[in-house]
Image 1 (cartoon, one colour):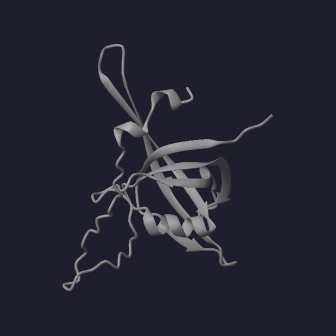
Image 2: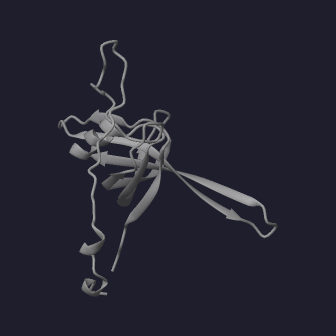
Length: 153
């Protein structure tokens, strides 16, 4: 059995770049940074940052381009793909990238790292962006509705 599966959770290092190939299909590319923190034997905090190139195709590429930006947190599910080409100087080049199959956006926030449409049309009369607060429904549970005998575990 063979398996080529990648899961990454990290932050975008730049805004996604959206292009269309000659057939009209959309493709977005971006880099995502992941970090690992540990304490070495001497008790010093160490950090390692890795950068991964991600490629997204089709409608998903358009959605990524619309909602993600530099600093956004995202979870990427995909597979590793190696590509090789010849550059303008005639040298052979290789790269490994993640071909994204699914992307999940991180939590929404009003500051950097959240996600919201780039072309936000929620402007007030002066033309400035005004944050829109999403109303969350309130759920009231009476104490008598939950009985521990009805819980199946």
